[in-house]
Amino acid sequence: MKSRLCLILVALLALATPTAAQELGFRGWGPRVGATNNPDQVLGGLQFNFGEFVPHLRFQPNFEIAFGDDFQILSVTAPVHYRFDVEGKVTPYAGGGVTVAAAKEDLPRGRDHTDLEIALKGIGGVEWPLQGGNDFFLELNVGFGDIQDFQVLAGWMFGSGRRGSVPKPSQP
Picture 1 (cartoon, rainbow, N blue to C red):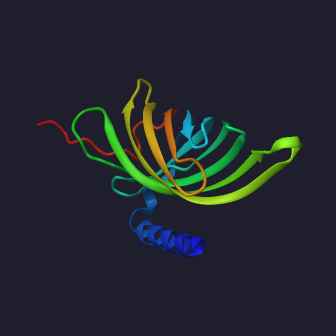
Picture 2: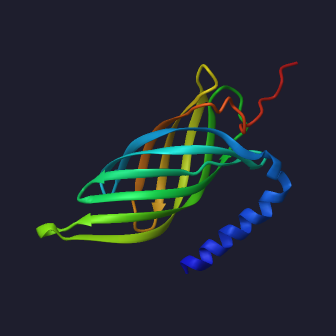
């Protein structure tokens, strides 16, 4: 089942990429911090903006390290964000991605157990520009699998300069 899901996601990405492959490329990076539920953890990580596949659909992979509730989780997520074209400086987005995570559970008497998990994430958030071409965001992730049920995050994207972002209509 997991391999079939991965194959479908790869096929969808392959169909979207040729039309706007020239828009892909490194656009910025930044830290992300937050908290999770089930297990209850704090997390930190880095994210990268690699531009848009097609208009409004941005590739923004990240990796995170989470601690707490007798677990340590190291995860890598490959999400795409659809950025809605709205008036104003705040840009809402929604999307999803595939997460691969190594989850280490601390067991009694010094024993540990580590599992490799693959899960899906639903993602929603808002971002807005800061001075100097950087962006700030707030995000909620919903997990579908055996990793975390929810994540609440805040973060920055340095050097993005609003490249790979939704163009705002010009004023007459």
